[in-house]
Image (cartoon, rainbow over all chains, first blue to last red; front, side, top):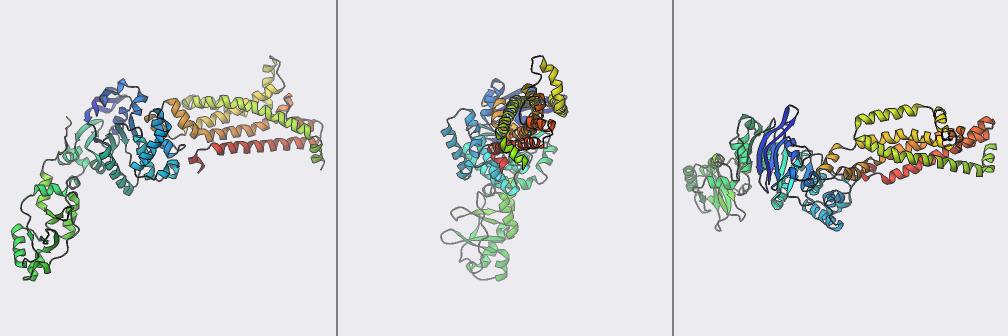
Length: 377
Length: 216
């Protein structure tokens, strides 16, 4: 855990960081977010004492950073910067082994650790003997993360680590980092100016403006209840759409539990049309005998054909939406397929319910905060 | 081919003088490296002071060598070394400071700030950062300074024959005073060959020690 208590940094008359207090619980990623010059990097750099604070208290793992020698403190904190900062005169292996070497690990142990980390970051172990200049930007940044993790520090400081990578690779590396974090459960302070990155990675997001902490909350609460107009404009006028990414299809199904009508292959079309009108949907799922969804009938088709069996007039299911997908995927299926009820199929091929506009609206209107949140004063 | 036959007839003399020449330059330059590199490291952290020191060294370098010998003569005469190898080596030592100190300062100052930040942020002490990161990265540029100092000072040392320092300059000065082009040309060519060989030697060392990233 990292705790900030009334932390202030003054340069002459200006306060770069102004009386900031909040906690980052163990195992969480806290994204420091804000426009350039808001003090987010300064705040982060005070944690490993690269910048001395003017007043206040910072605790890392329960110990005040002022009670520790700065050099020893830094060796216990992983550090990743946007410029990556791999040492060009050292191989990848030597770069990763820097902190273990400083800590006096046996050579065999630190080399083994370097190999283990490359594997963890999905890099070819053959890269160990290469020099940074021989690596692509994405590979370099992965090595940068590996280097920060080398001595298995409980805390990581990351200063816009993926900012210099092209958007395609950035998305990949963000997902990989998130998967890694789920395993490693580090306590991370992550500086970013990208709201999408913050929403994706942050367990909580601390928004800073002119050195002051404006709001510190979970992504969902932040989007739902921005503390003031600055936060609202920073998270974007389209914040409702952004929230769709944070909610899953399962959330919408849970918010919209009433009957999920289905058809049998032998049902007649007039029955299908009547059911759709009754439930206010323009499509229904057809279930086979084994309970698996086999197709879909649209209202207009049922009306046009008049008579006949459902099995002769159904169309194949569109790309199914799964319960763990985010609501943005469901909403786009809805728009692309022209459906008012998108069938959701679980991993076993069973029909799990419909995602409807009403369900999405109710999911969005529910108070967020599956994760604990604190509001800034 | 009177020149070639002169050289072959006097090969022992030429080699002896070349040996003297190498020894004089090596001692003076070795001293210059041992003082110039630490001075450069010291100055790299103090940019204001570094500007002043490099300025003074630049002015010093504009003093013609023959004038420098003249200036050193009365000073060193106090300890009975007004002429001979001592003033020659002191002159070369001083001339060599500029390229060595300047390149060391520049090379260290040009090490990417983000690398220094990463090194400090990971928990290196200043000394560790200097030894593991900054000096290895600065080394090629420092060696380039040493190379410049070496080549120019092989030439300077040729003039030192006028203050009785010995070396290949003896052939040149004698050639001039005796109006003997054979000695003059043999001395001059020998100095050139020495300079070229020394240049190649340092180049090889530079190649050997250049970090991978800079070699690519």
